[in-house]
Length: 122
Image (cartoon, helix red, strand yellow):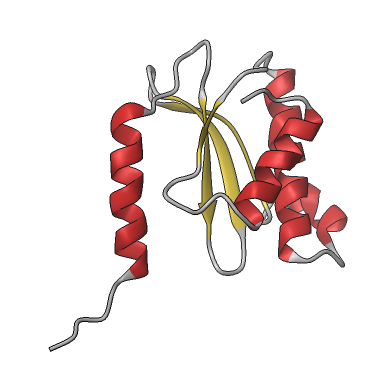
């Protein structure tokens, strides 16, 4: 009998394996990405203290006006730029990129490129 593969569980397993070796420090926090079908979220996390330092998403009210008329990849790039600008205000210039088990393509890659374009290094 064939079993249907749960793609999200496969992603979560990948994410767990990645997180065993990847951690954000106070010097170099972790830029974590979550992608849903409608939205994309990014947050910068200091794993040493267990705190989220800053975040941005397509749900943010201040970004809503900039996202109208863009496709999902364009929106992801703007979210990457927004989280990078917030990080630079907090004097964070270097981060560790955590793609959360997603393939580095499409919206995840667009978010990363937006963050790099705005000044984050990873």
